[in-house]
Amino acid sequence: MRNIALVTGASSGMGKEFVREISKKYKGLDEIWVVARRRERLRELKKEIIGTRVRILPLDLMKEESFERLKMVLAKEQPVVRILVNASGYGISGSFEHQTEEDAAGMIHLNCEALTRITYLVLPYLRRGSFIYQMASSAGFAPQPNFTVYAATKAYVKSFSIALRQELSYQGIRVIAVCPGPVKTEFFDRAYEQEEVKFYKKFVMAAPKKVVRKAIRDARKNKAVSVYGMTMKVIRVICKLLPGRWIAKIMGK
Ligand SMILES: NC(=O)C1=CN([C@@H]2O[C@H](COP(=O)(O)OP(=O)(O)OC[C@H]3O[C@@H](n4cnc5c(N)ncnc54)[C@H](OP(=O)(O)O)[C@@H]3O)[C@@H](O)[C@H]2O)C=CC1
Ligand SMILES: N[C@@H](C=O)C(=O)O
Image (tube, rainbow, N blue to C red; front, side, top):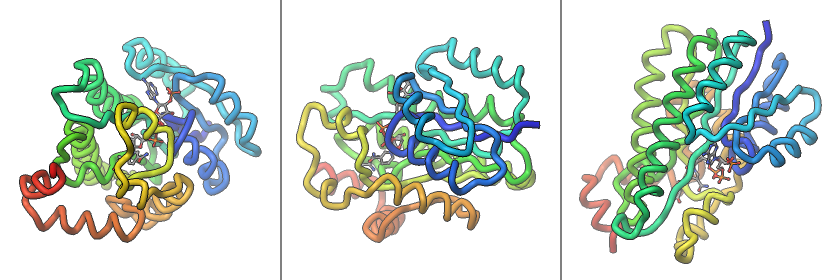
């Protein structure tokens, strides 16, 4: 029986860091399966990883056939999935009315639907002691004007993960919603293509390695949510205390 980790969004940012950290920190893995569209990036990552075999699955998770392909590979290989990391995702900043319909719907498609479907497909292959890392965001703590759809997708991921965690706890499977604030990755190239990144985001920007290491530590402690950094922890508490419409009003100004 082959023990594997499956990481989506592995071609950059936090997905890539998860692959690096998993290869060092989780012993007894036979393979890490890496998913993203950019095959060349995945090849470079494979070369970098020493000690654990990396299997490249170049899939576009916005396309139906990718799910069929993954389903077939899983059915053929029958692996035990020790770790699932759902890190593919994107955000587009700016007002809802000025967003393209494709971008608005695309965020829901990738951040919510694809993440849910991957989790569903992988579920039969998880065992007692397996981990699921779902990339949510601090954007999921409260409604956010000018990041409206993105924040709503992350509220979904957070809610989905916490509820699923409860459902799967009886099987000894741990689910963690990873909710960092701004992290220095390619995410911002796409999210803020049309405008300058807000100064306060630049100010609290975290390194992806630190966020991922914290997530792994938190998952081992069986936490439901992983939040990196004191600023984001304080913001989380504020978002719990104030009504969403107040937060939206403050953030909209
Ligand atoms: N950076 C930040 O500030 C934060 C990010 N997050 C979330 O963390 C996750 C990872 O983001 P981050 O690492 O920062 O961003 P990156 O842009 O660095 O990585 C995004 C990953 O998603 C993959 N991806 C995008 N579209 C598709 C697609 N259609 N099919 C398959 N894979 C796709 C990309 O690969 P490729 O293009 O090769 O397909 C890439 O590997 C996202 O869900 C993001 O929302 C959460 C909090 C903060
Ligand atoms: N948390 C970040 C995205 O998810 C951000 O605040 O930009």
